[in-house]
Image 1 (cartoon, rainbow, N blue to C red):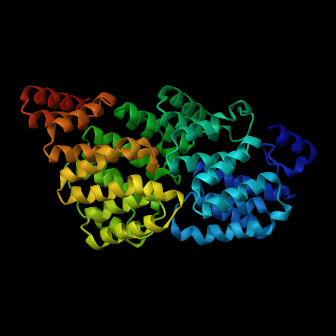
Image 2: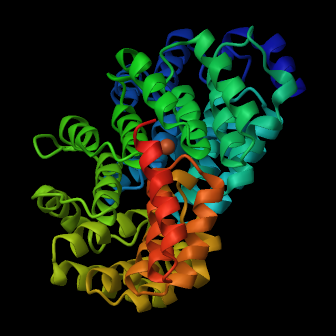
Image 3: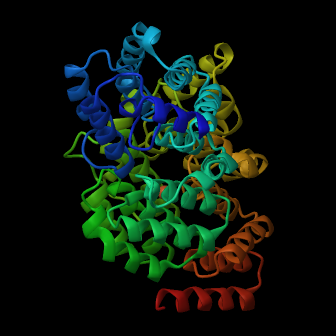
Length: 472
Ligand SMILES: [Fe+2]
């Protein structure tokens, strides 16, 4: 922080509103960048369109180009790759005028473009160590850590600068939101909820803080309270770019207590993007919810078809294993054998030749899960179990959240039940019930396992417990 403060003293007009140095000497440009950063943090508006307006007027504003390139790293889509590389190229042309912070941002995105996602995080972290109030660097590290499955990193990137932030610093509510989510993923639920609610007190329209509370309630099994919390605030977050994911969270509460009509209603109203362009993030949530609906034996109608249509052009992307897994969910569920084979063979070729950061994610978790889903759909349930059992405690390497990756554990349990491996199924169901005893679905699985083992007394008890939770 000393470096930022010293620079602020010497070059007051060349810093942002948090005292972080900016080489381009134009207050209007710096304010424009701040608007774009806040849009990205608050999931409001179009941050790329906003920075484009600034760059049209100020083409030599290197930090504007670096924001654009940096923010685009987070979309994990091949269709934006050219734009990201071009933005980085524009920044590169102006490196002679850059300060050390900007060179750090440049090197981070350069590493990302080269496929070294973990190296990029290290570069952004180095910027943040020197400039702890660089909110953009913190945002990019936090989100990248979520994408890469670095659970401690999601929390500690905020903790490292914790004594340098308070309510007097613009953007503090976003820092609280990041820390709340990081704490939640590290199972520090009470502290997470406390900080997320503090963030919401500062800015009620803060989707990522709502999200942190949503995760706490999901992990703690507070379904009824979760539904209430989300619905009371939906008028605030419902128009944000993050709304679909928050509706997905709301649907999970309903699913847990077997309120299927409400699950379908949320899907059809908020997650079904057949009339919209949609983006990968929306299709991820929609696919993951439909798979869960099928896991509990509910019909999904024709909902898979349009989702598979949306994923099919990305079958050979091999950009991000987390995407591939969700693409495979749709191909398997809509019986698209050619698309399944395209995805699997593209990944096999990629694993043989590539050396980027996604290789390990794909090899260790992505491919085993893709193959396990195909086994599941083909009713080779024993094979599905054998593929998932060895990797179940390594799934964080796929990225995403515990709530998102729970689809893997749930699929494993359902496969064990259908494979009639009831002793294993009981053990897996017990694990889930111990962690979330308020889930009717977990008790249903316990009941089915006991029934398979011939223990009707315990099966009846578990069924009664499930019934009691539905009416709770
Ligand atoms: Fe989430």
